Image (tube, rainbow, N blue to C red; front, side, top):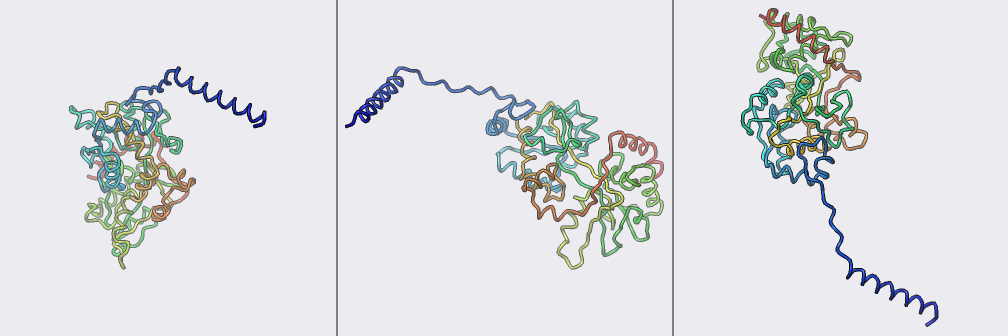
Length: 366
């Protein structure tokens, strides 16, 4: 053996011996201790560290209370079933048909945990007015949600939205190109509720009020007041035209899309494209705080944002998902066509309009 080989062998043996001795004499390294879970934290990293720990904390709570989310609304049935199947939590839906305002009232009046919502699904105006009831939480996909439709502290943030539209029966009336066409003979028009109580009906009146992108509540009131006077303001079940969100009318149209003579079509008037979002918020007094946070993380995943899209709603992360290639393009192609520059009511505009309608709606409509 050469001197170089001998030296190398000796060095290798010495190294092995030193390593073995070090292993015998040293104490095992301590495991890194994880911070305790904080189920009411304002973010995943601060409260849980990882999704696995969030899931574990939510499963220990065992349940999630929702409110105001019917199964046939923007595909919520599929969303809820997927959540239950994925995480094994029991989902209780308190008063599925509750309006945004009613959701907040139910939470305020709740006296037991099973009647207390963990999360809310409400209109922007109600969210702004009720922000003191919400716990801040920024989902992992926070940056994908446009700044214009979220509270920068994380108290509320858009989940999905759409455009006010006109659904109509093409077998009975011609396709309306604008809201004023509803005044033509033959139309029996319906609103999706009372505009003084429901966000959809209020926005229907405000969409009809738009002129050159500017809302004026008296114009909308005048249109529906005239329909009422002429006896052509109808119930949704009896109407051949319904002013409602495009995802409601589009879902109805999809039921007859394959027929030779479809019974329902939908149009978003290009001169009056009013857009709005429903937002998510966590109840500050949520009985299942970890489950509430898991639900929000779940809603903003690619999978669930695409489930909303299949329910004809426009998910809050739609633009970001389109850029990243994760958007369901087939589902997106089925959405009603809309103009590039929609109108989003500001809070002052909405407040002014509500004050006007509160003072004049009942008197005009009789």
